[in-house]
Structures are given as C-alpha cells and as structure tokens.
Amino acid sequence: MKQKQTAERVPRHIAIIMDGNGRWAKKRLLPRNAGHRAGMKRMISLSEAVFDRGVQICTLFALSTENLSRPQEELKGLFSLFREYFAKNVDTLIEKNILLKVIGDLTLLPADVSEMIRAGEERTKGGARGTLVLAIGYGGRQDILAAVNEAVRRGKEVSEAEFSAMLSTKELPEPDLLIRTGKEVRISNFLLWQSAYTELYFTDTLFPDFSDGELDKALAAFAERERRYGKL
Ligand code: IPE
Ligand code: IPE
Ligand code: MG
Image 1 (cartoon, rainbow, N blue to C red):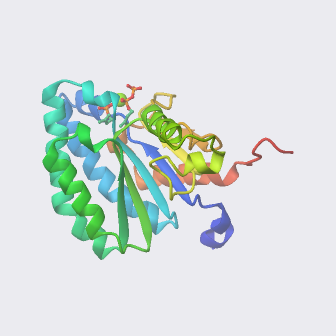
Image 2 (cartoon, rainbow, N blue to C red):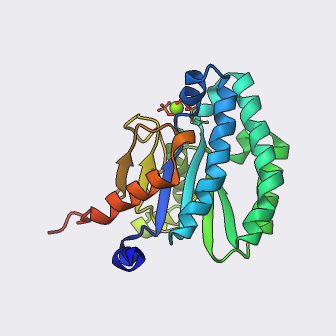
C-alpha cells in the first residue's frame, strides 16, 4: 500500500554526508576512531536499507579531500577501517548484486587501500540491483577542476552534458536527495556541480544513530517536495 503511493516518489539516487562520528564518540567518552567504527557499522546496514526501499544509486561521503589533513592517528584508524570494509564486505555486495564504485583521488590513499578499492570495483562489476558509490578522498572542487583541465587539454569549449561526462560521476544520474547527518547545514565540498537541483535534507542526528526509521523520515520528506527546476 505504502509502496504504491510513493512508487514514483522514491529518489532514484540518494547521496549522504555521513557526519557526526567524532561527536558520537565524544558523547560516550570514547576515542574518535570508535565513532568511525560505529559509523562504518551503520554505513553497512544503511546501504542495504536504501536498496530495499527501491533506491537505485546511493552515494556515501566517507572521506573528503580536506579530511586528509586530519591528524595521522585518526587517518590511520580510518584507513584500517577501509581495509576492513573492503576485506569483509565485497562478498556481501556480490551476494546482494550491488555494484561498487569509488569516486575520489585514490593517489591520496595508501597504495594497498587503493588496490583493495580497485579490486572491489572489479569484483562487483556485474551488480545489477543497485550501485553503491563511496566517495573517498573526494572533493567537489577537485572533481570540477579535473574536468576543467581535461576540457582545456581537449582544446575546445564543452557543453553541460559534455562537462558532466568528464566528472568522476560521469555515468550516474544526479542525486535526487542529499541527506546530511550531524547537525551542520553545509555541503562541505561534496557533489557541487551534481547537486545543483538536488533536494537537501539536514538532520541533527549523528551518523551512527541515523536509523532506518530516520531514513524513512527523509524519504517521506522527499516525497512531499515539489521539484520545479526553475520552471512554473
Ligand atoms: C564524519 O564524521 C566522518 C569523516 C569525516 C571521516 P566526523 O569525523 O566529521 O565527526 P564529527 O563531525 O567530528 O562529529
Ligand atoms: C564532511 O564532514 C565530510 C564527510 C562526512 C566525509 P566534515 O566533518 O569533514 O565537514 P566540516 O568540516 O564540518 O565542514
Ligand atoms: Mg564532521
């Protein structure tokens, strides 16, 4: 019943800025990396929940270009978590028929992590039920700048469509809904070009606490939005 009413109103592509792990840990007097571990656990279950609700593409902001300037200890913990994620979860993605794609500058990551990422993408490439995009070492400006430089190299002016096709998100439709957890009301250099007409949804809930019920609340809010794209 519910499914029928909202069938056309489920976002095809949902993007999530997974923020608030550090504060989640702080509240519990735990080290920040314990917050990242809790966030990763939630990320795994959330990425199943979104596809169960009919979303086709889910892009998760896991690490920004700017996050790479955090203290070494935190980065070490984050890279270990990525290693663990790719070692344990690629089989599950294959089982669930999900294609994994990573956007971001992998040269900024330890070589073994970037190898695990490429291997994970390769192994899941038959996934047809949905696409899980992880943004790791990603920055919206850097994405745009790389495309600008590519256009300059080609030596001729480009259209919007041609420019979009030069971004790291080339084969993906633009996000319909962008959720940011963790109280901040900003984009923090996520999908800048791609979210020109994306519906935005902000919640105070810290990412490890962002439940399936809260996801449903965001989806319900999206279903009520009227998208006009500047028209009447
Ligand atoms: C988001 O959580 C995850 C990453 C940026 C890696 P934060 O680490 O930014 O958590 P807060 O904002 O400090 O709570
Ligand atoms: C945005 O969170 C990046 C990710 C969630 C990966 P930040 O915690 O880095 O954002 P700012 O610093 O509050 O803008
Ligand atoms: Mg943060």
